Length: 300
Ligand code: AMP
Ligand code: MN
Ligand code: MN
Ligand code: MN
Image 1 (tube, rainbow, N blue to C red):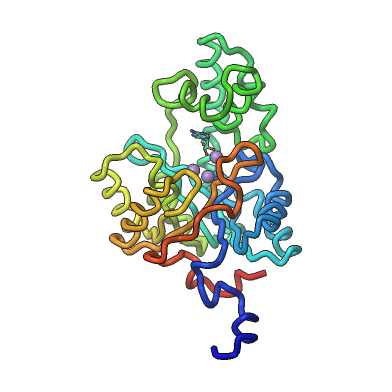
Image 2: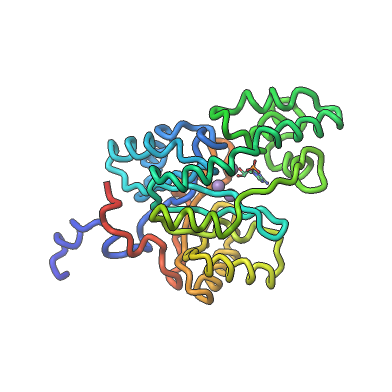
């Protein structure tokens, strides 16, 4: 390690995983993002991302295109997914990183999770119609690129476009959330099933944006225990929906529960997301990055 040239020739991830600009959480138009997988990968590369995972909601349909695009750019890539889970009356998101996108059990599992979205969307539109907002189903559909994946985000884009709200943030304060018009309770995957599909597909299960859940400390503790018992091994620490205080809080929780830490922007599209691809703070050096011991084979 004394020869500077030899050190410089080695990719940063071997020497210092904390220095790698990993973005392991983002969305394409195959779920509720606005860019194609190819355009998303190109943007990540242009923003200086050094390791990327596309993690569409309940969908693997973008993986082949993302992998191809990443290979073409020499960008290290791991296949990913973000699975919607129902746990104790709360919706929880679990990321699967490094999964085999061809795994049939995972594919059929998430197909089942997607299945209820159409009927849910019809009910959401009916609720919105009841408060005087007509045409929401058709309006949301205009923003959908994948007919199997109609989400609240598509309704939110319609509500902004139709002038009911100024931006997506306002939409989720006034509509589509519990107690507001357009909220339809839904049963997603079971936590143990989602984690099991991810592990069965060779992946690492990561608890996404823990700071977003409306859970008190005890309930969060119970969630993490159950997640670990199911085989979950990592937690998002630095992510687009956490504050700096939450980086520190969840770094502490990662250590307490012996979980690896992940970092991801949760980017959904230019002009829409608060955080750009690859633009987050690095992981604190008190935690171990989830990618620290991934094989160098994830490199392009
Ligand atoms: P769904 O899976 O249909 O319930 O939609 C959930 C999606 O809504 C999330 O993945 C986010 O993209 C979006 N979303 C939820 N809350 C907010 C918010 N406060 N601001 C912007 N987008 C949000
Ligand atoms: Mn989303
Ligand atoms: Mn999420
Ligand atoms: Mn997400």
